[in-house]
Image (cartoon, rainbow over the protein chains, first blue to last red):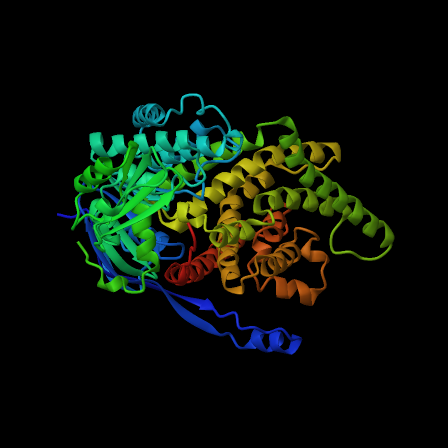
Length: 339
Length: 266
């Protein structure tokens, strides 16, 4: 049984239209004509997430990712459609649901700015009705998981961004949620802090079976934590499936980069006149792009090494972000398969 | 009902502790918190003393001593109701930080009220010391019964103040401009509550208008009770009636706002 399920989930907002009014009279007229237009932040989005899954929720800015997260935790009410999280309808049973979910908004803070981190944790423990023993045990666990020992006694305002985000993740975990909804949790963090956060999240999922829905633009996060992706654009669901399948959506193209002994490679054997292989020569590099469904990498490597002096080569797999970029800009996205 | 109240008290306790820790983190923070009500009380007392001296020989409805007592008590109560609560609620929603309030396992109104109680109790603890210092320094003393009556009206004052600021806080979301409505509300409250001048010194017509609003039950009526000019029962009854009516209105507005809530970006 899915732990999160949405059906035809839609959310529309009415926004003021900013019609150009350069003249004073135009501006005054606009004061009395309240022009509003409806925008669809989310349009009939349906998906399911099973317990213990880690799902990346992808999409360009303004695609509807944060709106979905806010709908799933009951902060917003949908215009149309339904959602069920842990058996609760979020916007109707918000108070019961939020005891079981943890949410991190990477650009907002729920910590008490002027007080030590441990005071924020103590405050949240009271709000969530944790006993002293639970508060102590959970703080200890979080501190170990996110390496917060030295930070607990520091006022939040004295923390670096990376330290603060680790504490934010900790704050979201204090009441031991079954589901973590993460909205760009590693935005602006350096590599080491990202690694720490990713490691912590992987542990939560693997060892404690916490379900993770991660909205992020960081493909490092996605590849480190998730094995499935849901992609939305302009409020519409564009893709739902495994990361490998998403990666291959740009086509079966692979690239092999050879470092050659001489600068004028013999390409006849490699290309063979077929359209499935393209080559590019730059100084001592030979870059070959090929259709892996028609030609194998082995055959190309064998052909190049047989007719050229090769000192090194590397196979470059299609990057996830290239596939996602393609999905963002491809006007025929609807034709793409859903897993 | 009792569980709900206990929940609100537990939220208040958490906020009280947090606010007390914040306000005592440095001695200058503490002093600056005391400075404003003391300066305000002293200025009002000297201003009204000047008014009384210039009106020497004229028949005034209250004595100078009663006005001094009024100002001291009104200043104390005004530290409870404050000035900018509506901004805090409105800014919370406008900035999007309301998302964290909505992630708590409590109704939003309870969260807000719990926070309000905790924050106000923390804010009023130290000014009480300042109030006592001013009162003793200026020889303004009241019988113990007056203080007890005042204490009995404080829950009503806080409930009424919360309802008012909650409504204004939500209403500013429709007006888009927090400052305009918030400041106008603040000044009307300051005048009609009696925080600035005892209502008894206002022209009769203005005083009548004031008493058609809930504002006098925040300061003027409770202080009048403490000074023996008004009855405790009638004041508490009016506090509760106004609070009930405003709470209903607040909940209607709250339902409307949660349906049209927009929290864009991140």
